[in-house]
Length: 251
Image (cartoon, rainbow, N blue to C red; front, side):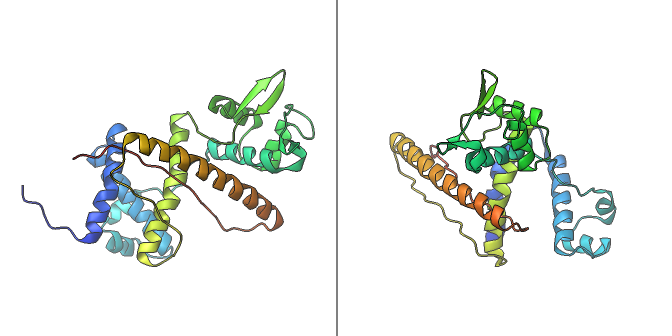
């Protein structure tokens, strides 16, 4: 079959869609479902760019039929319990009342400086019992002699839906940065290191180094961001992240 020439923009979108296609296939989403999702995304973005435009104008912008635009619902993702739990862990690491010798101290459930009070201080939309179960399941905390013990702030959800929402929280800001830089809307930091002819052992060693350095950076930023947010509350979202990709290439 003769391949149709693609513009640079189309080539880039095709490259971005390849891993998304893997995710769709693994979750049983075929072409019909993908088209429906794409319609929803196009309509949502059109209204985000021009909230007051008519249905006819959105149809012209996106190519989505007017009857589909009227049918599609625009909603938000449900709150993520993993995000709420991460907020609780951040406060536990930084609030003086929850520290002992600079480290997160063991907490009782009740009391002025207990776990339930910590959840209240975090101002998250989740019950303390729910968050405790999430943190226990993820291995971020343990329970010993009736006390809740901090283990790690590295939040890796195990529930499938929470994993999906955590991935969205990571991938969407990165993609938003990339697209914003391409369109000229923004100019944010977006760089990656790439070496393509390494041994597996060398790549494994680099992954360990990258993980350690990234964790140090994120912990430092986390501490500073938490202090700044206490000093001056606002409505600006800041996201910084790291990733490692490692795979054997086809010859």
